[in-house]
Amino acid sequence: MRRAPGRFRPRPAAVPRHGTALARRVSPPQNAAVTPEPGSTFFKFVLLVNLVARPFARVHERAYGLRLAEWRVLRALAARPRGATAGELGEELGMDKMAVSRAVRALEAAGRLVRRPDPRDARRMTLVASDAGRALVDAIEPQGRAREAALLAELTEAERTALDALLDRLVRRARALPDPDATG
Image (cartoon, rainbow, N blue to C red; front, side, top):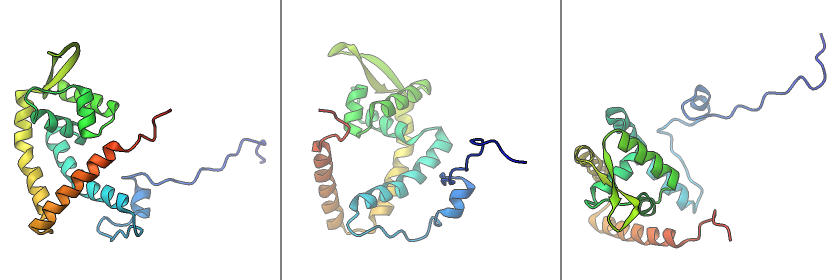
């Protein structure tokens, strides 16, 4: 039996997706050494963030239904008793507007933050961590600090101080870089 012309299309090559059986067969084991290319500092930053943040986030998503972006927003709000606007949070955290918006909606629906009219501009809303939100930050924060301490135990006190200063410089520099998506 012959197929009509144009009716057969080859299947696209399978692309492994995180968590799929194909990805597990193709991806290296989690404990396998990853050797970044020489000079790929950016890759090392991303790798470090993923190795530290993802397990922490998975635990708290299961325990509290709290996603990583929501945690970042809630933690920032808990540190600001007067609250902040969504735009201010996006700037402070380096998050795009949609990620902040989704996190705010989820936190508000869970009773972890409240919106109040901004006293400086009635057209804007100020986001404030609720009592339940602050209590959640108080419950989770010690675990985050313990994870940070376990990671930084590899460094001497002088190295930690130097790393902190270097990270501050790099954050300032990253904020000053032009946005590749900006048109103009």
